Length: 164
Image (cartoon, rainbow, N blue to C red; front, top):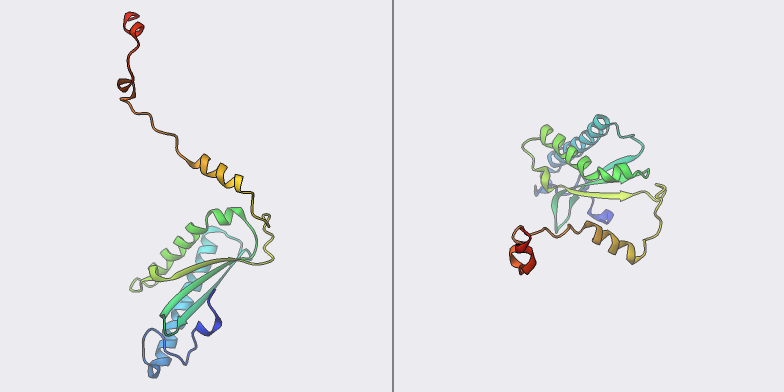
């Protein structure tokens, strides 16, 4: 979580520009934020995601350690396993829109954060027991492939050739 002291202030340095360019830099930061919001709204509309299920906020970070970093915070306000399943696709769709709107900007460097509202009605308030994770790992392990030459590695049975 980023503390509020890292959030951009229009009077501070943005995008590595000197403070004398703060009005221009602030308008660039404002434009960047508006493009993220537009991509968010278009993604929600295009895919029919209920607008009250998810919220988007943009943080523009300008501190000594980082300059001009854009953080996109997507907050899930209503629990939906369906939305969680497609959260990565949702993020990719937003990036596609951003790249279409501003082709000269490298949106791949944006930092993406997903958070959950406290009152999102998550049906899983507690972590499962460790055995459940082990079962998931075992279920995901692909079966060992059968070597087509496996039969050549095993010794032949004496009666097997006589039956032919």
